[in-house]
Image (cartoon, rainbow, N blue to C red; front, side, top):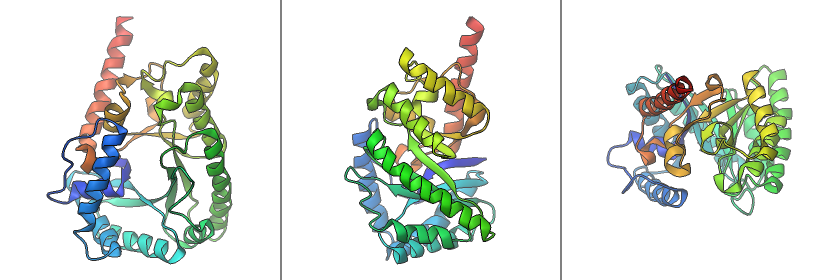
Length: 305
């Protein structure tokens, strides 16, 4: 069993006793309120941030093992200087290696704020981290207001540099980078802009898209005629394995009112994740169960036709 999309803070909250949100979030504002409170409680448990990342990664891996999870993609943000980023990811790598029953793939994340990459002052410094790490590494992009096309194009410029770094790593005998992007997540953008953002990401060479509601999720998959061509082309690319989709059913249901799976969506292209399990109060077993319920409902609807 695998948890393909799990954020560090939400994962650590799930693994530590006594840290739970006051209530399960039902929209993005309530989610971010819960996230900030949980984050503050977690930081108070550890003497230093490095201890938090080292011990926290170990705690997350142990908690995952206890659930029968054999591998997880653990997402944590890059910080604003080379030394801090190196120390953070070295601590996480050390923590992940203490558990032999759960393989932890670190997923470094550029977290966009509305004014740009506020937590990544020096992109060149972060690139140095990725060039030097011998571990397999996925790079992700997430954050508010980053899916609008103008801002997304700034992200895609960074993706181009990541591809160059990936090839440099490969030439030196290191694993290529895998590149992921939270995109097509914000339903307020509408289907045309939402699908355009997914298209731009996939055409730039992104390997994984996270959430991508306009592709798979009811009712958002029911797009107008002017968006159908882009959606159909993306579904064709998904069927050929050009990219994969991270789906976190509970997060999509609670915060984007998702009710099921599109009739034409190829579920073979999906990897399930918990997103922020300690905040959303979920497990990978619960995510798999909800996804299975949606598959059954889709099958029954087909039988009814």
